[in-house]
Length: 380
Image 1 (cartoon, helix red, strand yellow):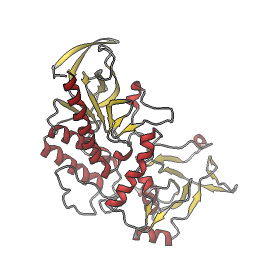
Image 2 (cartoon, helix red, strand yellow; image 1 turned 135 degrees about the horizontal axis):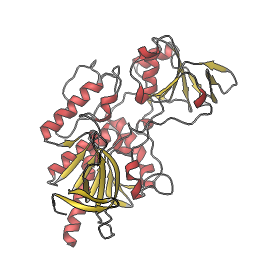
Image 3 (cartoon, rainbow, N blue to C red; image 1 turned 30 degrees about the horizontal axis):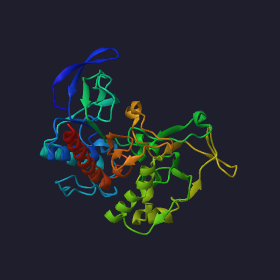
Image 4 (cartoon, rainbow, N blue to C red; image 1 turned 30 degrees about the vertical axis):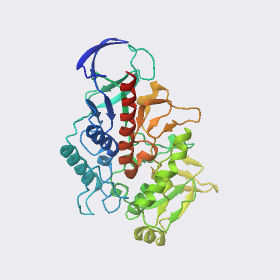
């Protein structure tokens, strides 16, 4: 498909302006930037890189201030650009966006932002077939529709931050206290003097427990007994975690986070928290009451706050018109490509959702895309 500038396409509600590009990258976090880098390196153009954020950094822009570079699991360097030395006490929500911004400048990656993709669908004006073009609908900061993008392929790197997950628990609507999700967490000081339930068995939950316990009283709830491991989080451990997600991805089952496969790693800070009784885990409560929760043993615990550190779901709602979800409830993958529709690559999904897997996913998606485009040219 040649770049043909901006044209008109007849859509359901009349004629809309359309811009033709070879590839659309949705999301400019680590996976999206890696994909954009490799597209440029392989000479694929024109490419549109769309990002819903106001500036560089992806989901890192929204992390809480107390999550410093010393307390994150580590970030993986972007292609051809080492991570600069940074003070471990610097908040990750500042250091990582600065690094991403420098990468965009150095690599000459032009990101259109803030742009939110609302729908990806088949081009109704083209003949059906495996190489049918896609139309990408999006809106700008004023929520006004932007010109359509017509493309041969979409590299989706939207991640999970915009889809916080809160489980359904009886009585939740009757709670008179405050409920919030990790995505809304700002600082422990907001909970000074309060009784706070932290729900979740991941790294975020542990961080919240340690911080809030210094200013308030905490209660830790998980559905399953947490598993702690006596080893540091290494690159090898990250690779093992990525490998653990592949079976679900290949089979089309719903995919959990890569972090859920790493287990919880004992650190000196966590051992101190355990010795102080902060990590005394309770089984998930049976019901939420107006003033607290009903424990599984029938007793009641009074609470002021319920903090849901219960993770996120992949942001793929804009792909629903393509009907990619299979009978097992997930999207079956062939590498980074959707098995049923190889025009779509999910580079912020499954193994590509980790900082280690993101770079590889971006590179792998572009390599596969180049092979597919070469076959199309041969057939032409």
